[in-house]
Length: 140
Image (cartoon, rainbow, N blue to C red; front, top):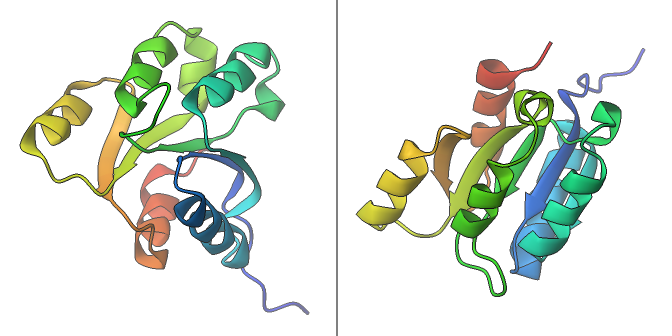
């Protein structure tokens, strides 16, 4: 009999231009059985292309998306503006969290006003936050 905890989510997507944060969050998720698969993107543009390319193939879509705010090329908020144009079936499947080291009140207000954002959390991703996510936002 295995003592491993059951996996909470099939897949996560992490979008962060900081490769260290990307690696740490990915390891935290897989090591603690919060997700079976982690799609890692250092570019919001590439992550958006993945979502657009798989919008009709729900099993390939992540259940949880973590997106950083400040990134070159396309910011997290620009990503969310494009994400809003994706089909409803995709947006109903994915849960998006803004993950940032910013505590700027304008960033928090902008994240909280976006209907596609579940919540904004401060970096780094912690095991406690993932436990909260598992309990509060599990998708049946």
